[in-house]
Length: 67
Image 1 (cartoon, one colour):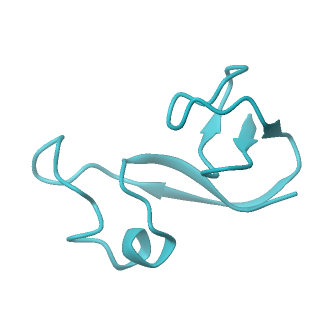
Image 2 (cartoon, rainbow, N blue to C red; image 1 turned 180 degrees about the vertical axis):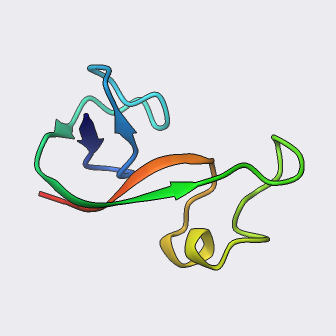
Image 3 (cartoon, rainbow, N blue to C red; image 1 turned 90 degrees about the horizontal axis):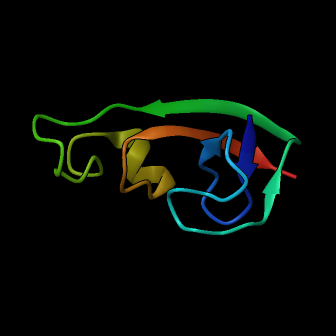
């Protein structure tokens, strides 16, 4: 998997589906998974302390540190 340098989203694609950036790295540390809320369109920052601290607004897999 590759981590986006802009938003830290983890993907297997050549472009980040989260922010459309093409700056991806295979060198990252740590993974956090943000699960969807009660509704798919709810902002996870409302219910998740981790998502609010990391400023993650969409569910998915994210790297903690990207080099």
